[in-house]
Length: 388
Ligand code: HEM
Image (cartoon, rainbow, N blue to C red; front, side, top):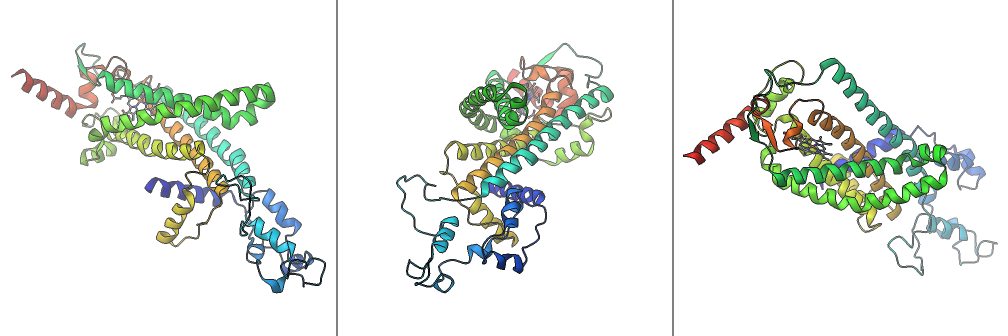
């Protein structure tokens, strides 16, 4: 539920951020359309601007507002066609449909326009600048700070850092994440980048392949996420040592080597980010994979409203739930990609000796002493006890 709350909150912030101010229509204009929509309402909605539609939404089912029974539109016993159409527009009439899917009786909804615009502008912009920005920052960091080396050089002696099943779990998670990121980004940017360069046909083939990979590899990601959680949660409970480590900036700037157990505070942040955001991206992904079966935003908004007194929409149409899941899925995934790019840097070129932990599983003893001194002490104490 917490994940849903955070998710919904960010969606709400995003919605507010992208909505330019929309001046309410004057009564005069509304009067000229007989109280119906004005051209400006329609244009504003097409631009993704929020339009206050209470003048239509609340104008339902009142026979006094309908054409009288002996007028042209008054053939339905005091309820005009306009009233029925408004009812259909806001899903407030009982409709019989031949298809009994969960969203089949919603005949009209207009959330698609703001979903489309948000995806094409804010989400693509966030992904482009965010991922581009972290790559530029890491390249700049590499050329200014340089590679973090083992002080005094490697000792030549090694200690086992991760067992083979732990490395297998990590590489399943990493491999699936990288494939999901690549195919997700192809789907996000296909229309903007692939179509102008390679044409519609090529983009269609790439998108079909990408969604197939994405939908199938997601199961590997979810499975390994659970495995990683179970294997490492005990080593990732925050404690006072983490605070000291963070105060010293983890020794990344400067040459300090703050004390750490198996995982330092920086790694714990990566761990919890992976677990929490990985769970959130998985749940929103499942709701996309099983359309209309897992609505969760309306309930979350209602909860946020109850706690904060806000006025988020606590009633959403099935399609709006899907649109929000889709946007949320992209926001969380992109945030994860940005953080994981930094993780991959530190675990490979950024730090001498780090990759061995996930490569052979054996790390240099001097590396281990400099980055995880308390863990080495624990391991040596265990080995000493076993040798007795
Ligand atoms: C090519 C890509 C990657 C490389 C080279 C890499 C490297 C590493 C290394 C060396 C460690 C162990 C650090 C230590 O000794 O303590 C590690 C740990 C970890 N990795 Fe990766 N990794 C990669 C991709 C990923 C991805 C994509 C994810 C998640 C989606 C991930 C999640 C984790 C987590 C949660 C840990 C434990 C916490 C930590 O050490 O930060 N890794 N990785």
